[in-house]
Length: 75
Image (cartoon, rainbow, N blue to C red; front, side, top):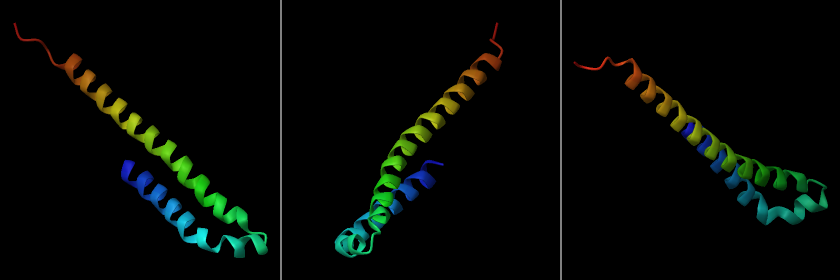
């Protein structure tokens, strides 16, 4: 999951960088929102990376805790 979100974030940022040199063209044609959408996608992707990393850590922690409580203690 982290790899998917990271890949998407990188893609959005690369699209932003590719469009940046053509900002004048986008501005002349009223399409500057394309550039800013890519930047917003990259920014939201950073939040997504943070979220899925924390989520996966919490799932692993819960599984570890469950394993510890399910294991019977030796006499």
